[in-house]
Image 1: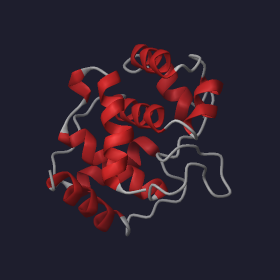
Image 2: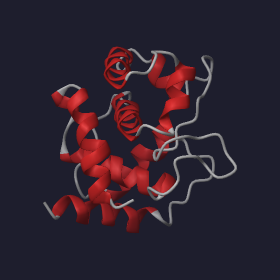
Image 3: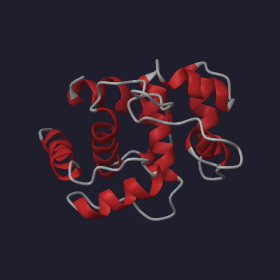
Image 4: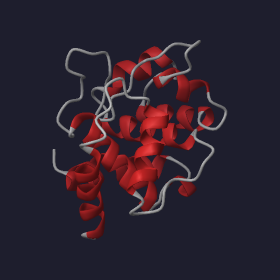
Length: 164
């Protein structure tokens, strides 16, 4: 899927369902770069894996506090996730959310933004590629990270954002 469509049909609608302070160019470039890194905006279901949605969320567990469970339980994201679920017509339940991520790009984009929101550090400034990688890899904790692909994907996200 083109990044223009992702921005218009997933990220922008998700931002309208979240507090205005969560919408920023820094957030958008991170969502684009992470989606490119995780799925290339091609796969909503991880190949040979459990992750769902373009941002490749795992369900996690209550004890691991990872993936959907992490956003569901975190004090900074929980109330916003409930509102997002209400707006998208999905039960406020980690199992229901996880199941819907594969088919609801707005929910997936909102959940990804909320995952970033759980980090107490500010988002990296636009163009700070290494800090963006550190942010992504620290929050997503990819099982098989590919830092060598990040520079080109992050640059592509910046190009799309700069085209406006």
